[in-house]
Length: 151
Image (cartoon, rainbow, N blue to C red; front, side):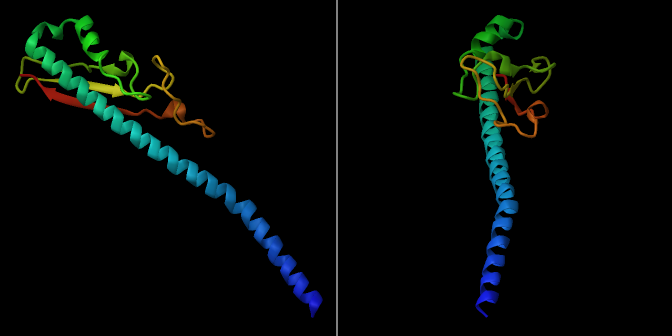
C-alpha cells in the first residue's frame, strides 16, 4: 500500500515537471507577444499625434506664408520642432505624400505621414520589436497619416 502511494506521488511529480517544461515557455512567449503588441499600439498612438501636430503646424505656417508649399527648407524647419521622446527624433520620419499639399481645389489641405524608424535620429529610436526572435523587424511598419485644412 505504501509503495503504491509513493509511486503515485512520484508519477504526479514527474507529470507536474513535464507540464511546466511544456507550458512555461508558451506562457513566457504569450506574455512577450502581448507586451510587444501593446508597445506597437503606443508607437501607433504617438505616430498619430506627431502627424497631427505636423499637419497643424504646416497649416498654421501656410496661413502666414503660402510660399511654404514650394519651400522644402521652410517645411523642414517646421517639422524639426516636432519631437516626442523615444518616438519622433528626426525629420526623416515625416513625409508629405504626392498631392499632400492640396491648395488649388477645395477643401484646401495638407497631409503628413509620420513613420516609426527604429534606430533613426539623435538620440536613436529604440528597436522594435526588441528582442526580435521571429525576425519580424523588416516586415513591421508603423505609420500614421493626418490631414489638416488650410485657411
